[in-house]
Length: 573
Image (tube, rainbow, N blue to C red; front, side, top):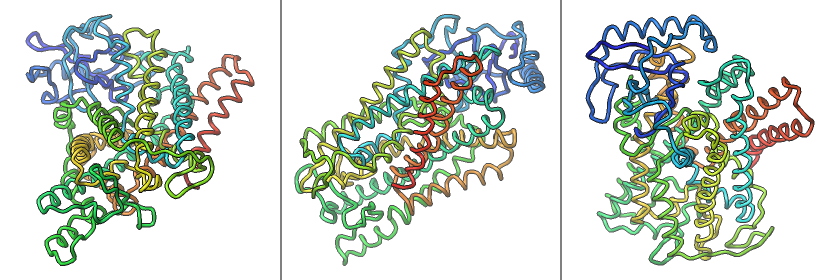
């Protein structure tokens, strides 16, 4: 922590391993947490405030900062022997808070006990953070499980993941030998499991993060393709519903996978064989053969930026803040999808028949053995466990943490139920079968549909702004831990980005199934953060205190077995 010259302002920056996400600029943080964190030097161009006035860092502040940073590295993080004393720490009202997106924000009126998040803000943050790309696959997952089974699985997975998240929240309080005030959940894992806990938590966090980036690339390719197709068809007055199985009314719904072996059609159809212009368009604008490669030229250069401050300023307009391993699409996106689904359901009406075990021509049975595919999707859909401590530590009333967490999970569960039930129930069967529900339910609306076009182009723009931030977080986690520097050289960064982008392009070309990608990555990272780590840390802490009983042991071992089964069954569905 460094004092400034009389004509400068104080700068307080947490260490890289314990960054605090400030969220939108009106969200405040506990000053007591900031005192125990060491700073690092930040370029003046990254320091912003509401008036966009650049605050210069003095030479004295920079020198003090480097000195403290050096001393802090001489001991383990839990050892406070060389922590900066209070007399060099500026007052809370004269502090900056560092964003993981690369900017330091000046907090106005930052005093002890004031400006912390209310329960309503905390609940909203948790709900908003969990609402991600998984929401697009919920109707498909419900179709795979069966309507009745799907609703039951969504509610049961919500309860199970809530309990595991509750165990994460309480995990720090189970450690009495050291001060865990500033700890995040990976620190808890490192305490119980040593270096294995640290590196395994890093591995599974990267699995969720890179999995999200792959899903983003597939979706961006999809949305870009359909956007270009909409513009071309609109200019040339082409009706694309004539080429695929669809309903013949004013609200068309299509079945892209009909006649393609159950897999989505990755190219658009040639409607008129003699139309040379259309054939050329189809040749150069193909969902799986060309469009994924066009994104490389746009996004790969952005991934190699050394500082993420440009993207944080660009993306602050929609308050899309990214925590490590967690992705969300933003409140506006979710609200628009809810509006879209509601309007479509009103126009299409409900189409339901109940057959418990028998498949009919147009309807799926209520109970299907493919329900583990839905549990895999839901594991990622309810995944917030690796950052829930950060979100809740800023709650104004800490005694309400469990209540607020439960309310947030209830709202998320209701949102998934609402989207899943409305899309499934309103899907027009007959003439289409319920098996036509796509892994991205927007694919069931033709590219000429105006409401779907708005949703696609909005999500495309939003994902293209978030994707470089995800790449930066992957760089911080991997290169920062392996090389001790998040930007060891342009060569290291370029190789990492080529691997990540290459994985996205390969999936977009050969396996553009976001439901499959989500369920595999969700089951993999959820195995550690949702099922194993919370249960094992609780069992170990009870054993150390001689409070472990057989019912508690059996119950938490059963949770671990459920997590293992959830991952294993993904490979047999």
